[in-house]
Image 1 (cartoon, protein in one colour):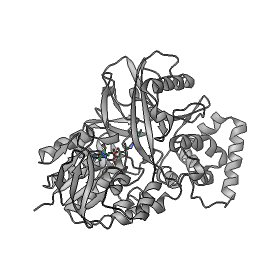
Image 2 (cartoon, rainbow, N blue to C red):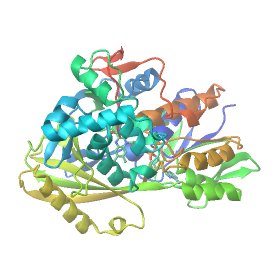
Image 3 (cartoon, rainbow, N blue to C red):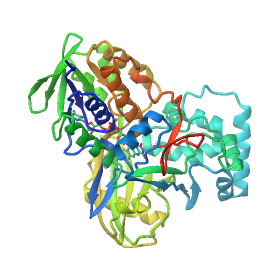
Image 4 (tube, rainbow, N blue to C red):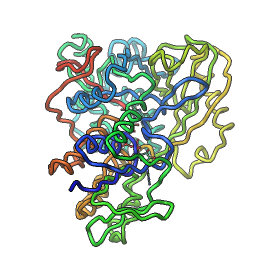
Length: 481
Ligand SMILES: Cc1cc2nc3c(=O)[nH]c(=O)nc-3n(C[C@H](O)[C@H](O)[C@H](O)COP(=O)(O)OP(=O)(O)OC[C@H]3O[C@@H](n4cnc5c(N)ncnc54)[C@H](O)[C@@H]3O)c2cc1C
């Protein structure tokens, strides 16, 4: 008899776990609160075009993840040239940083000061580099840190970089230093496998969410079921053994195993009476929210980037995505371009309560300040608010997370995975890998430690997706959020 498995959430992590189990004869039941699949990586129709929730570049150099992605997507993808730049004080800087571009845009005097502060950082052994600020300063110098990392990171996280754990940097910027970046520029990337230096990525036709729609179809063909608009209230246990779950509509369902991608904090709070120490640690784990404002702008050639990081402090948005520059099928021949401006806030902030009209107005003003669209008419706007989209790596979070994960590990039949689900700043690839390994733990009796994924990406077999499929890789690999 195969175990009866429930999966909470049909985002990349949950739907991948169900897909892998369904292929092996399980009939997983997936419960998704929303009326569609893909979670934060879903795609949807807007003004007759297709958009994602902000930019959704899929990238991995992990063979299993890429093989699965290709198995699902087939040939239905294109390679997209990546162009992403930083907008700072009216100037554009390539991101990932290209040292000569960066230094020439800054001007001779500023470039000299940046070089000087880099030397100071090299010679200094001060600091334990546990905070984002000290980690980046050590590798780039204080001046480059202030220009290229501080404002954006503080917009994103809403806390000073001195309170942000260096995990954010080490998971996203990896071991890159100014010296590494210069070396890469001189060798034009040859032999450099650094995670932030990728310039092409595979993108599925129809938007990033089509991957997960295809997985849903396959799950249902194999006898599993994805229940949409069916939020789960809590997981029920007898002692430390999972018995099943209760839906928001009050229905109780029995399962042998539950894979959960609902927010870890909510999952644990709703278990039967978590100990006081666990409850206290849960309060310390915070999520940050995203507000996306989509603007439909007349014209097709606004600017060439897939997305831009907005570092200037006088502009509130942190990132602008231009869906025109992904794959042509997204725009469906429209004469208008959809831009998406991203904002981040906490629940008590005024922005979270602001009306759609107020937010569209804010985005219009921000766009105007960038000068990017040269006053092209803005036809209309649309707002999407995403709660709890970023787990905040505040200094000290690891100790609190450990208290929670130690408690969860005492339960048999319960597997929390995913970005919400395991409090990890995951990209799609990390969540897909968590899904693959969670399914293996159940179906093949493996014992993968899922808490370790996306803490140390020591990938073994590197392979990337190219125009023709999976290729063993000495090529650059990618990151960023
Ligand atoms: C603006 C933005 C840009 C991003 N850009 C990129 C990018 O360029 N590249 C990249 O790879 N990744 C990117 N990401 C990250 C990517 O979206 C996530 O890594 C991925 O979606 C995480 O998948 P997940 O399944 O872990 O979580 P989610 O996608 O959050 O899925 C969780 C699912 O669980 C459901 N759920 C929650 N609670 C319940 C409940 N109680 N009952 C039932 N269902 C529930 C939710 O509705 C959701 O569908 C971006 C994210 C954001 C917000």
